[in-house]
Amino acid sequence: MVAPPSTRKSPILKAVRAPIDSAVSTINEELGNARREAVIEAEGLEEAAVVAEKSARAAVAQAAVARVRGEPTIQSPEQSAEALKNEAARLREIADAARAAVPPSVEPVFTDATPEAMTELLERQGGRGFLIHPEASEILTQATRTDTKSMETAKFNSAYDEEFISTHRIGRGITEVPHPSLCSLLIVQPEPVREAYAPKSATGVKSRITTNGWSDRQGFVLVPESEPDTLDRDRSIDPRAKEAYTLAVSREWVRTYLLAAVQRERPRFRLTPEAFQVIAAHYDLVERIKRQPGVRAEAWGKAVGRAVRLARCFAQLDVVNLTPAVVHPVHAKHMAAGWAIAEWMLRSFDAATGAPETLTEAELVDAAAVFVLEKIPAVGDSIMRPKLRSSKKHGPYIGTAIDLLCSRKQVDVRGQGIYRIG
Image (cartoon, rainbow, N blue to C red):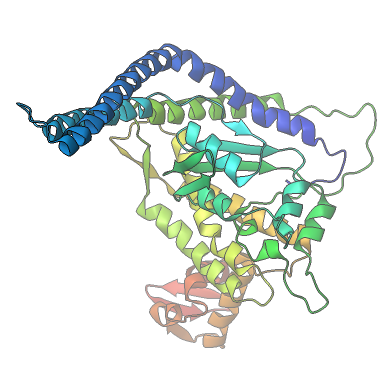
């Protein structure tokens, strides 16, 4: 969120965190006893594995000595050692499985933005986490640096993309997160954003942060300069919106967290054919925008994916019984809402950084309408709809353009034919 000073960032941050804190309390109550019992079982099995491993090591040492001395036994030392090694390995496997089955601790929100700390925090919670940073200017600075003190952004990219991440640290071993799921809310003032995204040389070379993929995965919300404040101004957030948001977010955090912690499952969703139709036109818009000079092609390329993620969130709100046994539908209304937010975030970023203006869907529809009229320039002229739709440039918008022209009384539709009437 990019916002100048005194634009009520702190109250907004408090409202965002409230349902998550409530969810954490509920989850701890639900999993408290189950977690304690699972920890006791895991620790007991780990102790058994340690004892078995110690016995196996002693047997291996005894077998080595006996082999050197040539001492005869009823059962060879090698056979005894092998049996103990197999037993120790099996106990360690059982102990590791028991430790993995312990419901993860609930600490979803963190502000430490180093890749190593982020990976460890995600690993402790089964891959789930929420990075909230109220003063994220330092992140932009570290991610923009080109020296040895720069921040690695690759792990943040992978966590956003839900791809495998790991860290190898001397003295701490390997930390692995097979299925990460990282959300983030970064609050920063406009000037650090402009500095971070500005070209770094007179030749217009892009800054590091615009080429490492990190910024292209962020959705930006630009809060414009506000009018001068007054003491008696009502600054409260609409209580109805606040209550609805708190209830919805808290409920979904609890449902998805318990599903992952207890059943080791994730809910499944799939777009309906109607939802695919909604996103198809937006996909075509993105493909047009990506080819405009000066635009953030990669960021726009990820717009459809972000819209699908948002649509999936809206779809989950409509699901009563969230079970992994059922593939839940993402309907057209969810897809339309997801795209509206995703597009708004991209255009908000363009406004915050002074990026060149990009085409809108309305402009593409208007261009398609002009194309239709050029094909039937005089009253009485006609053309078949399939011929119009075959246009690679205007085809995706022909249907909406024809509807627009019909509303203007310029064309009439008769079956597959489009007739000029005005």
